[in-house]
Amino acid sequence: MGVNNGSAGRARVATPLRVRYAETDAMGVVYYGNYLTYFEDGRVAYLQRKGIPYSEMEAAGVFMPVAEAYCKYRAPARFEDELTVETSIAAAGRANVRFDYVVRRGDEVLADGYTVHVACGRDGRPVRIPAAWAEKLGFPGGGV
Image (spheres, rainbow, N blue to C red):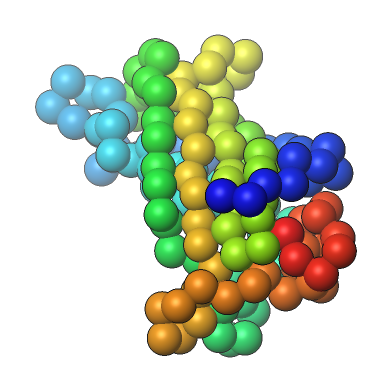
């Protein structure tokens, strides 16, 4: 990925979540796959806060499928825990973005990781991220 690691895109957005019973497994802890859903919640909130709602992206014919995902589990979350997902942009190219995430319960880090997304058109082919969006995300210059 050609990357721009400009500091402007590193602003973190905190998204509060509360663990639902359905997200836990037989041991009473959050099932590991649900952390990727928490990452998605954080990413959607991040983009919304930056003025780029997912619905606007899709209406413009730009989709952001996941090309890569990673999560490091550090401590379990349990039913009714109040969590915060901190989301930031770590790197970006003309048609891709890496979001970093930290899931916390208070000051304790429960998990951290990242997802890499490729901007695609309706036909599934990569497209350049629109300049106006790149600027809102902190990577001006006609593309991320």
